[in-house]
Image 1: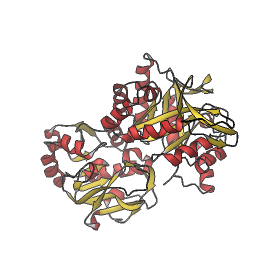
Image 2: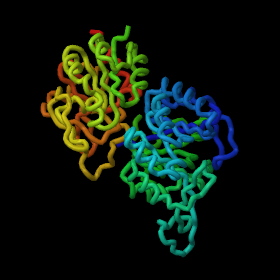
Image 3: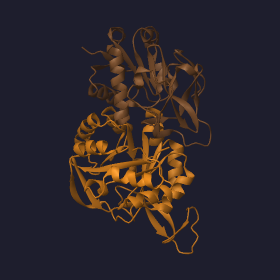
Image 4: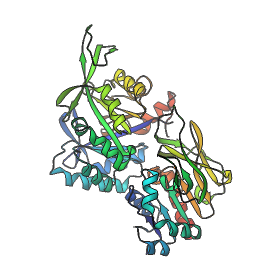
Length: 268
Length: 202
């Protein structure tokens, strides 16, 4: 099975933006244009995330989804601000193949079961934002504590765009999300996002070994080597990245060529 | 005038199939009307979701589909392929359209299911008009947990490996079907749809 390389477009008010640790946003272009360029460059899939996620922005989002889906002949995933079944239905009707759910899934886990029953698990992706909680030598009952190169830690789930920690163990949450009906998991790390130092491979590996569905690594890619590490050390099934592609630092084709040269099966 | 109808029976992302057919020069129409089915030159049976619901939703369109599907080119996509089979084991035993003899079964234990992502074709019937211009090793996009095990090996046009070798393209007379999503398979998928449009216009 080939590993996927997925460019992610973070969108606000109809424009693609990029920031560090979900803040300090800069303009990075038109979503429809970028998505189409990525398709031609060999992207395996495109993800569009509406990070403004306001009610007013909803119509803009649906319009962008529709126009993007019209020019994209590879899988297209859309997320941001999904609260109800109706939000999901609207995105699918406008051309999204899958949706990613984050905050609403944590606050209302049964939404996942209802969504999987209504639309099929194959289009329900759960996105999990995590932050490490270092514990030193202490034991923490009820949490999955892992030894990482940076120290012993567990991972806390964050919602509302990475602004609110909820004290839930992210690894257990990933397992539960799959039980409820998630067809894929996207894992993003607040510790690693935007820093271009690599993905949180210890977290990825732990989740990948425990869930049966594909795992998509997000946050932290600065070089193709970081992506290779996420796929090999982190055992992820796909890598997602934003700024590394938007600013033309590396093209998708370059990344895939590098992965292939290092023994990772990719679609070239 | 539309020449290819995309059968809307209440499931799935029909818009992408419609846009892809337009992209390769076809004139598609999404419809759930029997009369449109009769008037079309070619039919696409799409589908995402569960077999049982899809078969139930297909309801009264099924007899017409059976009759029209042997007269004019029909392309089943994903669940649309599975519906052509004798029966499916998804969530019980459910009867299909029985155009293709065989059974729809789940992937064996120990694999990540659904089978999601890009995988390769191994073309076994090089004369099939649907696969003209394609080569073994070309990538297409899959999303499914079940596959159709055909009884008659001659109906297999291409196979794909995922734990087991399963039929990824099948054909029987005027009936063609892909287990993957050609409308989501980049240039390879568009080529398959262009071939289907050519078959319809032949």
